[in-house]
Image (cartoon, rainbow, N blue to C red; front, side, top):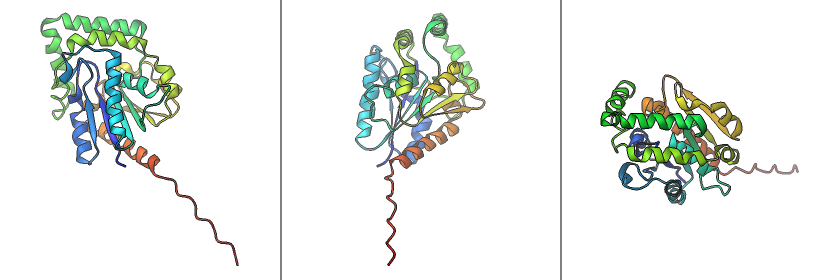
Length: 253
């Protein structure tokens, strides 16, 4: 059966952030579905809730699992939600998992500071988009520059989504994850704060740090991220192959 890929975006952005990955996978004939979480992208008018976010991920994974083994990949907030989802006590039908730019526990001073910064940007003229656009212009390559914001920015959802993340028990979830897991971080990503802890707690984790990238690792180095998707898919394909029973030797006559 063909590996099925489900992609979960980060906060403020939408499924469009994965355009490069979708094009790459479709070019390989790999079925892929990039979802919009509540309050984001095509669902901007909806209210974000953890229950709604988990239901969205589960619907996509369950649907994909009917056709083949599932590789789930999440970025930033989407990665944190996916850690909690894959690490449920009753494991969902996920055969492999990529957690990108999300090795930080969203609690305490770090989360409070992040929320304050987000509110500060939101209070600026044009909600800080002049600065956002300037940063993206300087850091993203032309082929992905428009993808990050093509589905719109979920300004009104951001604070509620950030606040909701504080209840996630990520370390307990990581301990329960029993499938191949890849942590992919940018070299200069601010969410590498608990990277060593995450890798140490997870059972089957590999850490990959992409040089010369920040938080938007999939958009800054799309060819590298796409190659890592290929590695994960190949691993799942290998694991899905039935083991051959060694042929019994014939008795000597």
